[in-house]
Image (cartoon, rainbow, N blue to C red; front, side):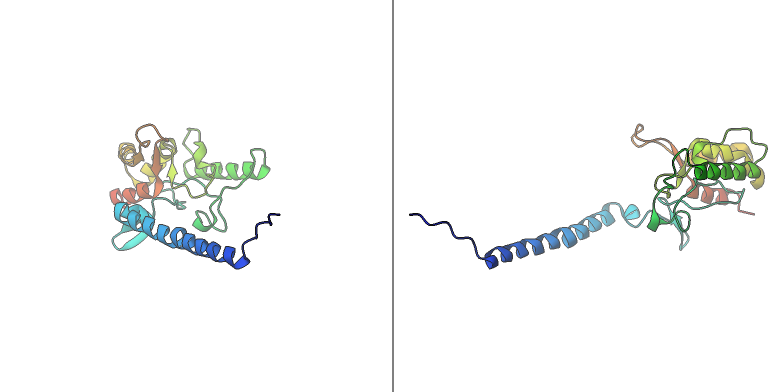
Length: 202
């Protein structure tokens, strides 16, 4: 009578499992991240460092994370719903308020009121991206329409012509990738920095 096959000893299973676990941990947890980080630093050094924007030797922000601007002499960014402060990279996310939520309606009305107070003679409808937060809460861009909505106010406060402001917006409008992917967008921080170069803040 043939005897049943014997089961491998526990030690015989555990040792190769631990070896595989340690090897995969080294490869995927250390070697691969260091390799990709090193390649990125060589091929895309600006992006790998956080796409930081500097003035002289001072870091003023990142191309990837928005900032709050409330002075009428600057272009305003898209609202941010992150907590405890706007554009908090450690708490990226939207407000998660539904379209029928009264809190969302109140926030939108308050944002519209602030824009109208800064430019009461502007008859143009307020672009939606100036009154609603993005899903990430970190969006550094606004639409060209949102920049154009603010152009007259900025020109008036800075004592510049509308043509000068329109040219600045045009120069800082990013085109869709490969001409088809995405929508045109304006990076608010880089636009405002260029604005200060053209006409220093008062």
